[in-house]
Length: 245
Image 1 (spheres, rainbow, N blue to C red):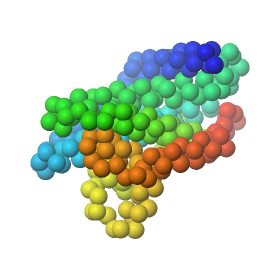
Image 2 (image 1 turned 180 degrees about the vertical axis):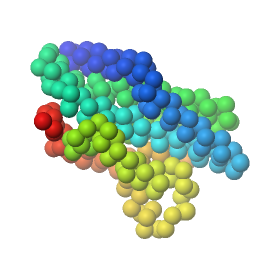
Image 3 (image 1 turned 120 degrees about the vertical axis):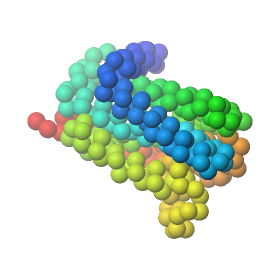
Image 4 (image 1 turned 90 degrees about the vertical axis):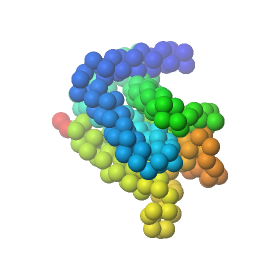
């Protein structure tokens, strides 16, 4: 157990070093999502403080689709096709440590982005969350779900580029149909009933509850259910052997 944690930490540190030393990875995984968030917050200022509050808290949840989903799916797939995962599996690190190291690196990137948005929230008079523990549970739980989903997408993709493209429908559905940007009640009732069970909805609901809104009782249950389903699917579909050649 202690050895696995050490290998996970070392692999996560290596992944983070690669991200922050590579301009393309740094831009796509870290800077671009923050730029989109900054733009949305800036445009929300026209709607007053309530609009800023809504967008800021929504973006804390929305950022989870970038590093833990889009970038991680590409990482897993590229490394599998280049036989990097197989070589690592032949070393001292366990399968859990190998996959967990990359996932931990992606989660750290997401946490850095969340801290940047929280700092912006203070500057924009949104304030700090009244229940930071609930926000942390939402953020970490959401990161775990989307990291597991990235493994599922990686398993059915033949290249890193295709894996990242395959995440786009998931990302668009989660961002367009859930109350991340679009206000509750703006979409048809049947769509909102469907969206209530998407993985993004409980994350954003728990984040906003941490900032003082009412918590929907089913949100923690939906998030836990997604974590269980995603874990089963990841175990079923993730591949260690290349899909090509």
